[in-house]
Image (cartoon, rainbow, N blue to C red; front, side, top):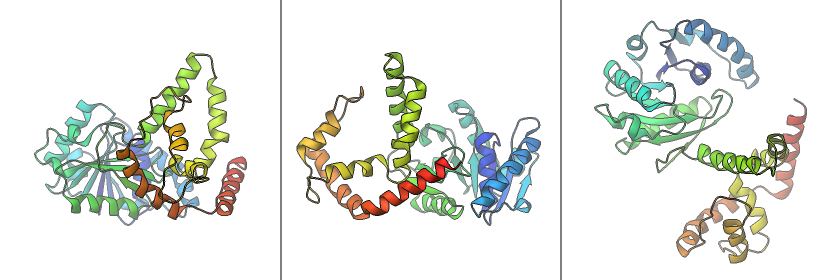
Length: 301
């Protein structure tokens, strides 16, 4: 694919570095003065990092452009990295849609804006999707993809295939919600943390130390939902939901955020997902070996 990266600040420069580890031809442009030198300096920094991941940068695949029109003229996919302000993103996307091929995919790096809102002013909103990375994109593999309601399935699949080709691990969301998955979960943690700080219950340092040395280590191996399975599985048969234990998880006073009620509808949603999660679970021995490996890696930095 021919990729255009528009905006080469912190996120955009990281994207460029990752894009030129693949087999794709990449163009880049930014409206800021001196962006070329800053981008090349960022690539100098990122190159040894990607080499450690066996993903060498190929600079001959990158072309720095003098204008937005030049950068997007032949692009199959345009990665938009404007600041997180809806009016700026809408204006940039309008220009990308006007200057680029009619069938190119426009992928926004937005952290939480809805794709339909960003695509509001372009003739074909089915061209646009959210491709939200976690910073820095060249090192953190997970990302969230959210299409507009008008986006054809084959176009969404083409974008997913592209991101996988450069080592990303995209999660395609079926519903567009502000903040997507990752930032909504992080927001819940931030809010509880600041509640504790405001009430004098904990300090920033204490909270950070607990997360880094506790749940943060575990979440590198199993996510928060999977991490709870070991606890609820002690009494549950496969596919069953123990009322007492799940009620503790949902309605505990450990959080200021209200929990959902364990209704019949929620049970019906949970059962097949629990069965699927349990089928993929590591054995306790394998999980502990991974935890030891993660701990050693962190301690040896």
